Image 1 (cartoon, rainbow, N blue to C red):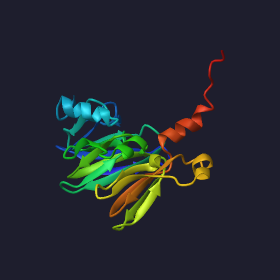
Image 2 (image 1 turned 90 degrees about the horizontal axis):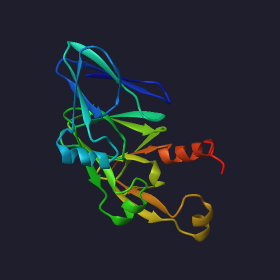
Image 3 (image 1 turned 90 degrees about the vertical axis):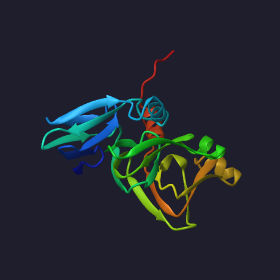
Image 4 (image 1 turned 45 degrees about the vertical axis):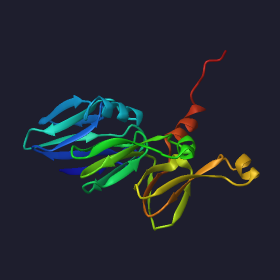
Length: 227
């Protein structure tokens, strides 16, 4: 399998498959493809797996695209302006991603829901209790709103982040919620009451434009009916 990511703000992922290779994505995730690609749509793993994916921001049904010709091409595009992030996972290697981050992956990749165990993290962590867990082997592609910044935290190294900017992280990274100190900081900084504390070791991928921020920025330009 070969792939190419094109574009800057509105990227596309073009994948070239050889006979017998396949990718799966959420229902409606494909943009265009050549002849030689066969489609199969199902709940992938059963009804409970499908319901779990729905809770994590993906569709109940997934579609697998398999190459039946010597070579064929298929293209995927993200739902919002941002970046396509490719990650090569070794056998049993996991990555935790925000809801709705999954774009597509090789059929060998396993996708599950991931629950935040701590109450405070789930309530104030920006993405709720349910995230996505992706397990190798294989290549997985994430769609990340805005630009992506990667940090590789050393053991004990801590990064404080507005929770909405967390796109993905290694499962070795400890994720906790901390409160902002100082009344004036809480009232006038615009950062709210809580920040996320990410402690290494492990990699962290941050996004520059959470969809909630983009929605708020666009809201004032959307006309409303006057009473």
